[in-house]
Image 1: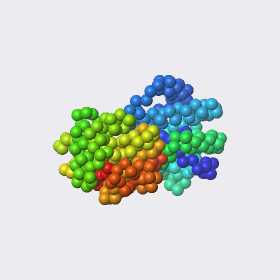
Image 2: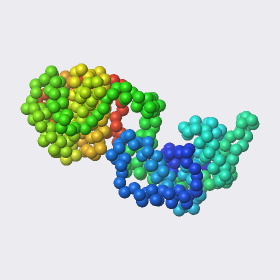
Image 3: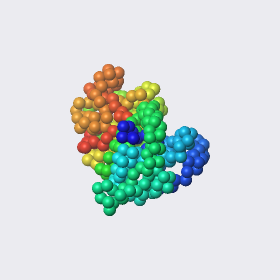
Image 4: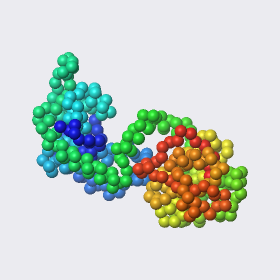
Length: 373
């Protein structure tokens, strides 16, 4: 039985899709093949996180399709979507529909639908609960138990293939999914959308109409805390030449009430190496987590550029900002200080971003909008 196997998230069953109707392996394969041939470009790369739901659904369908091909090639008439429930039964022996729904995190009607499909295929059966004869529980039939025994090495191969795939992609995919699900448990997508709308903060890309704000926002905090250096004036006076031209980017934070209230830039220091720089928030707009929102956006956009290194330079006086950077994955780095610290006289702190399994850093528990060079 499968109780001896440590199968956590095999390719053959990463997603449970209750709304799907089993139409047989041939239809699954032919439908998937057509979709795969049509995928000549990927608009989801442009959409970014806002397309996450549709993209994970597409990924699940692709995984199910490729798993179906594997089952068919091996001569098994087994739907990939049946895997989670079948595996649960193999591990537990018997289980009530309500308990299966809780363990798999799906609705009872969804479990009932899969159970009906498996019962029609002769793989499961409903029997009286040994502890309570009034209750019926789901268990593998003799045919199902025999099939599971045959599928053990196949599922083990799926597991190894899934591990290899995650290693090749450089991401612990099951752990990433778990963190996203945990984050949604803390605050639903709807709650987050409503919070963003209530804050009224938008992050927009650079265009020439916003050029003056890049200089005034940065000069405000620079002149309050430090001496404005020549390199500051060069970059702020002509960001097209010194930032955008070499391959960097600039973003602005805006609100309906206050207008442009924050900015941040990514400067391309050399091929594959980017500096997070010139981040600031107007004094009148602080306390609204605008700096935090800018920082998250810039880190996300930076990693879409596939950098070898993302660093920043700051000063010990900016303790609140340093704490914010640490919460978002930056570490103090003497190597960066040696290589780039001489760019500013005020620089006595250098940090480099520690990317965690391809994920954006966690939301910090607290933050400040006091930011850095």
